[in-house]
Image (cartoon, rainbow, N blue to C red; front, side):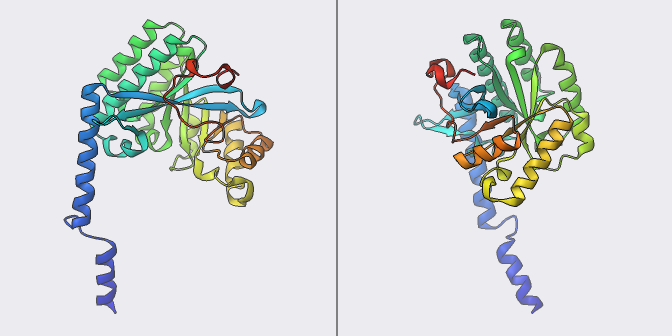
Length: 279
Protein backbone atom coordinates (compact mmCIF):
# COMPACT_ATOMS: atom_id res chain seq x y z
CA UNK A 1 0.00 0.00 0.00
CA UNK A 2 2.80 2.42 0.84
CA UNK A 3 4.33 1.79 -2.57
CA UNK A 4 1.00 2.46 -4.29
CA UNK A 5 0.56 5.73 -2.41
CA UNK A 6 4.09 6.73 -3.37
CA UNK A 7 3.40 6.02 -7.04
CA UNK A 8 0.18 8.06 -6.89
CA UNK A 9 2.10 10.96 -5.35
CA UNK A 10 4.59 10.72 -8.21
CA UNK A 11 1.72 11.02 -10.70
CA UNK A 12 0.08 14.04 -9.12
CA UNK A 13 3.27 15.75 -7.90
CA UNK A 14 5.69 15.47 -10.83
CA UNK A 15 9.34 16.22 -10.17
CA UNK A 16 10.81 19.52 -11.27
CA UNK A 17 12.47 17.90 -14.28
CA UNK A 18 9.30 16.16 -15.49
CA UNK A 19 7.92 16.86 -19.01
CA UNK A 20 4.96 18.72 -17.44
CA UNK A 21 7.22 21.03 -15.41
CA UNK A 22 9.44 21.59 -18.41
CA UNK A 23 6.43 22.53 -20.53
CA UNK A 24 5.18 24.96 -17.88
CA UNK A 25 8.62 26.55 -17.59
CA UNK A 26 8.88 26.85 -21.38
CA UNK A 27 5.46 28.50 -21.58
CA UNK A 28 6.54 30.99 -18.93
CA UNK A 29 9.64 31.84 -20.95
CA UNK A 30 7.53 32.23 -24.10
CA UNK A 31 5.20 34.63 -22.30
CA UNK A 32 8.10 36.71 -20.98
CA UNK A 33 9.63 36.84 -24.46
CA UNK A 34 6.28 37.90 -25.99
CA UNK A 35 5.78 40.71 -23.45
CA UNK A 36 9.39 41.85 -23.79
CA UNK A 37 8.94 42.16 -27.55
CA UNK A 38 5.67 44.04 -27.07
CA UNK A 39 7.36 46.50 -24.72
CA UNK A 40 10.23 46.96 -27.18
CA UNK A 41 7.73 47.78 -29.94
CA UNK A 42 5.66 49.89 -27.52
CA UNK A 43 2.71 47.66 -28.43
CA UNK A 44 1.07 48.37 -25.09
CA UNK A 45 -2.32 49.94 -24.43
CA UNK A 46 -4.98 50.34 -21.77
CA UNK A 47 -8.45 48.86 -21.56
CA UNK A 48 -10.96 50.79 -19.46
CA UNK A 49 -13.68 49.31 -17.26
CA UNK A 50 -16.21 51.47 -15.41
CA UNK A 51 -16.64 51.34 -11.65
CA UNK A 52 -20.16 52.52 -10.87
CA UNK A 53 -21.82 54.03 -7.82
CA UNK A 54 -24.15 51.58 -6.12
CA UNK A 55 -26.51 54.33 -5.01
CA UNK A 56 -26.81 55.53 -8.60
CA UNK A 57 -26.35 52.49 -10.79
CA UNK A 58 -24.96 53.52 -14.15
CA UNK A 59 -23.22 56.57 -12.71
CA UNK A 60 -19.48 56.07 -13.16
CA UNK A 61 -17.31 56.84 -10.13
CA UNK A 62 -14.07 56.12 -12.02
CA UNK A 63 -12.57 53.79 -14.60
CA UNK A 64 -9.99 51.10 -13.97
CA UNK A 65 -7.17 51.09 -16.53
CA UNK A 66 -6.15 47.53 -17.34
CA UNK A 67 -2.88 46.95 -19.18
CA UNK A 68 -2.88 45.08 -22.48
CA UNK A 69 -0.15 44.10 -24.93
CA UNK A 70 -0.44 43.10 -28.57
CA UNK A 71 1.53 40.25 -30.07
CA UNK A 72 3.26 40.36 -33.46
CA UNK A 73 0.02 39.50 -35.27
CA UNK A 74 -1.83 42.37 -33.56
CA UNK A 75 -3.88 40.22 -31.19
CA UNK A 76 -4.64 42.02 -27.90
CA UNK A 77 -3.47 39.99 -24.89
CA UNK A 78 -5.17 40.71 -21.52
CA UNK A 79 -3.12 41.10 -18.36
CA UNK A 80 -4.38 37.86 -16.82
CA UNK A 81 -2.50 35.95 -19.54
CA UNK A 82 0.92 37.38 -18.74
CA UNK A 83 1.10 39.22 -15.40
CA UNK A 84 1.94 36.17 -13.25
CA UNK A 85 4.81 35.23 -15.58
CA UNK A 86 6.45 38.68 -15.46
CA UNK A 87 5.60 39.73 -11.89
CA UNK A 88 9.09 39.12 -10.48
CA UNK A 89 11.05 40.25 -13.57
CA UNK A 90 12.32 43.62 -14.71
CA UNK A 91 9.91 43.54 -17.64
CA UNK A 92 7.15 43.49 -15.02
CA UNK A 93 8.51 46.75 -13.66
CA UNK A 94 8.57 48.26 -17.16
CA UNK A 95 4.97 47.20 -17.75
CA UNK A 96 4.01 49.06 -14.56
CA UNK A 97 5.86 52.15 -15.85
CA UNK A 98 4.10 52.01 -19.22
CA UNK A 99 0.68 51.52 -17.61
CA UNK A 100 1.26 54.51 -15.34
CA UNK A 101 2.50 56.70 -18.19
CA UNK A 102 -0.52 55.79 -20.34
CA UNK A 103 -2.74 56.54 -17.35
CA UNK A 104 -1.24 60.01 -16.98
CA UNK A 105 -1.74 60.63 -20.70
CA UNK A 106 -5.42 59.71 -20.34
CA UNK A 107 -5.84 61.95 -17.30
CA UNK A 108 -4.22 64.86 -19.16
CA UNK A 109 -6.47 64.31 -22.18
CA UNK A 110 -9.72 64.36 -20.19
CA UNK A 111 -9.73 66.73 -17.18
CA UNK A 112 -12.94 65.12 -15.87
CA UNK A 113 -11.56 61.58 -15.91
CA UNK A 114 -10.82 59.71 -12.67
CA UNK A 115 -8.69 56.63 -13.25
CA UNK A 116 -7.21 53.73 -11.32
CA UNK A 117 -3.98 52.12 -12.49
CA UNK A 118 -2.60 48.82 -11.23
CA UNK A 119 0.93 48.51 -9.90
CA UNK A 120 3.04 45.97 -8.07
CA UNK A 121 4.63 46.75 -4.72
CA UNK A 122 7.87 45.58 -6.35
CA UNK A 123 7.83 48.71 -8.51
CA UNK A 124 8.01 51.11 -5.57
CA UNK A 125 11.80 51.22 -5.51
CA UNK A 126 12.23 50.94 -9.28
CA UNK A 127 13.89 54.18 -10.51
CA UNK A 128 11.98 54.39 -13.80
CA UNK A 129 8.65 53.98 -11.99
CA UNK A 130 9.52 56.79 -9.58
CA UNK A 131 10.59 58.97 -12.50
CA UNK A 132 7.40 58.21 -14.46
CA UNK A 133 5.27 59.03 -11.43
CA UNK A 134 6.88 62.41 -10.73
CA UNK A 135 7.01 63.41 -14.40
CA UNK A 136 3.31 62.64 -14.79
CA UNK A 137 2.42 64.70 -11.74
CA UNK A 138 4.47 67.63 -13.04
CA UNK A 139 2.96 67.49 -16.54
CA UNK A 140 -0.64 67.54 -15.30
CA UNK A 141 -1.13 69.42 -12.00
CA UNK A 142 -4.62 67.94 -11.44
CA UNK A 143 -3.65 64.34 -12.20
CA UNK A 144 -2.74 63.43 -8.62
CA UNK A 145 -6.21 64.11 -7.25
CA UNK A 146 -7.77 62.03 -10.05
CA UNK A 147 -5.35 59.08 -9.89
CA UNK A 148 -5.96 55.91 -7.89
CA UNK A 149 -3.12 53.41 -7.58
CA UNK A 150 -4.30 49.83 -7.11
CA UNK A 151 -2.05 47.39 -5.27
CA UNK A 152 -3.20 43.81 -4.87
CA UNK A 153 -3.48 42.36 -1.39
CA UNK A 154 -0.90 39.70 -2.23
CA UNK A 155 1.57 42.27 -3.54
CA UNK A 156 1.07 44.67 -0.61
CA UNK A 157 1.79 41.94 1.91
CA UNK A 158 5.17 41.15 0.32
CA UNK A 159 6.60 44.33 1.81
CA UNK A 160 3.99 46.12 3.95
CA UNK A 161 6.39 48.60 5.54
CA UNK A 162 7.65 49.77 2.13
CA UNK A 163 4.09 50.09 0.83
CA UNK A 164 3.05 52.12 3.88
CA UNK A 165 5.97 54.52 3.48
CA UNK A 166 5.27 54.92 -0.23
CA UNK A 167 1.61 55.69 0.36
CA UNK A 168 2.31 58.19 3.13
CA UNK A 169 4.80 60.00 0.89
CA UNK A 170 2.26 60.42 -1.90
CA UNK A 171 -0.69 61.51 0.22
CA UNK A 172 0.34 65.12 -0.25
CA UNK A 173 -0.05 64.75 -4.01
CA UNK A 174 -3.72 63.84 -3.57
CA UNK A 175 -3.26 60.31 -4.93
CA UNK A 176 -5.71 57.70 -3.63
CA UNK A 177 -4.95 54.02 -3.08
CA UNK A 178 -7.06 50.90 -3.52
CA UNK A 179 -6.35 47.50 -1.99
CA UNK A 180 -7.19 45.18 -4.88
CA UNK A 181 -8.55 41.61 -4.67
CA UNK A 182 -9.10 41.86 -0.93
CA UNK A 183 -9.92 38.51 0.63
CA UNK A 184 -7.83 36.50 -1.82
CA UNK A 185 -4.69 36.79 0.30
CA UNK A 186 -3.63 36.83 3.93
CA UNK A 187 -3.72 40.47 5.00
CA UNK A 188 -3.99 40.71 8.78
CA UNK A 189 -6.13 43.41 10.32
CA UNK A 190 -3.00 44.63 12.08
CA UNK A 191 -1.41 45.47 8.73
CA UNK A 192 -4.67 46.75 7.26
CA UNK A 193 -4.94 49.36 10.02
CA UNK A 194 -1.41 50.54 9.28
CA UNK A 195 -1.92 51.07 5.56
CA UNK A 196 -3.30 54.25 4.00
CA UNK A 197 -5.74 52.65 1.58
CA UNK A 198 -8.75 54.73 0.64
CA UNK A 199 -10.77 51.82 -0.71
CA UNK A 200 -11.02 48.05 -0.54
CA UNK A 201 -11.93 46.10 -3.65
CA UNK A 202 -13.59 42.86 -2.57
CA UNK A 203 -12.25 39.88 -4.50
CA UNK A 204 -14.65 38.52 -7.11
CA UNK A 205 -14.57 35.08 -5.50
CA UNK A 206 -16.80 36.50 -2.75
CA UNK A 207 -19.08 38.33 -5.18
CA UNK A 208 -19.98 35.88 -7.94
CA UNK A 209 -23.31 34.28 -7.08
CA UNK A 210 -23.57 36.26 -3.84
CA UNK A 211 -27.37 36.64 -4.10
CA UNK A 212 -27.74 32.89 -3.49
CA UNK A 213 -24.59 32.07 -1.53
CA UNK A 214 -24.85 32.50 2.25
CA UNK A 215 -21.09 32.06 2.79
CA UNK A 216 -20.27 34.82 0.32
CA UNK A 217 -22.90 37.04 1.91
CA UNK A 218 -21.32 36.67 5.34
CA UNK A 219 -17.80 37.33 3.99
CA UNK A 220 -18.84 40.36 1.93
CA UNK A 221 -20.75 41.89 4.84
CA UNK A 222 -17.77 41.31 7.16
CA UNK A 223 -15.39 43.01 4.74
CA UNK A 224 -17.85 45.86 4.30
CA UNK A 225 -18.01 46.29 8.08
CA UNK A 226 -14.20 46.44 8.24
CA UNK A 227 -14.16 49.03 5.45
CA UNK A 228 -16.72 51.14 7.29
CA UNK A 229 -14.76 50.91 10.54
CA UNK A 230 -11.55 52.01 8.82
CA UNK A 231 -13.31 54.76 6.84
CA UNK A 232 -12.68 53.15 3.44
CA UNK A 233 -14.87 52.89 0.38
CA UNK A 234 -15.83 49.34 -0.55
CA UNK A 235 -15.92 48.19 -4.18
CA UNK A 236 -17.36 44.84 -5.25
CA UNK A 237 -15.48 43.26 -8.14
CA UNK A 238 -16.81 40.80 -10.74
CA UNK A 239 -20.47 41.80 -10.56
CA UNK A 240 -22.09 39.89 -13.42
CA UNK A 241 -25.85 39.82 -12.85
CA UNK A 242 -28.70 42.13 -11.87
CA UNK A 243 -29.43 40.01 -8.79
CA UNK A 244 -25.84 40.37 -7.56
CA UNK A 245 -25.98 44.13 -8.12
CA UNK A 246 -29.32 44.41 -6.31
CA UNK A 247 -28.07 42.41 -3.32
CA UNK A 248 -24.85 44.43 -3.05
CA UNK A 249 -26.68 47.74 -3.26
CA UNK A 250 -29.00 46.49 -0.54
CA UNK A 251 -26.19 45.83 1.94
CA UNK A 252 -24.70 49.27 1.34
CA UNK A 253 -21.72 48.62 -0.94
CA UNK A 254 -20.28 51.88 -2.26
CA UNK A 255 -19.31 50.91 -5.80
CA UNK A 256 -19.50 47.95 -8.16
CA UNK A 257 -17.44 46.76 -11.09
CA UNK A 258 -17.97 43.90 -13.51
CA UNK A 259 -19.36 42.72 -16.81
CA UNK A 260 -22.90 43.58 -15.73
CA UNK A 261 -21.93 47.25 -15.96
CA UNK A 262 -19.43 47.01 -18.79
CA UNK A 263 -16.57 44.91 -20.11
CA UNK A 264 -13.09 46.43 -20.40
CA UNK A 265 -12.73 48.29 -23.68
CA UNK A 266 -9.72 49.79 -25.40
CA UNK A 267 -11.91 52.71 -26.45
CA UNK A 268 -10.89 55.62 -24.17
CA UNK A 269 -13.62 56.89 -21.84
CA UNK A 270 -13.72 60.29 -23.55
CA UNK A 271 -14.79 58.56 -26.78
CA UNK A 272 -17.62 56.69 -25.08
CA UNK A 273 -21.21 58.03 -25.04
CA UNK A 274 -21.62 60.64 -22.33
CA UNK A 275 -24.08 58.44 -20.40
CA UNK A 276 -21.43 55.75 -20.00
CA UNK A 277 -18.83 57.99 -18.42
CA UNK A 278 -20.65 60.60 -16.34
CA UNK A 279 -21.57 60.28 -12.69
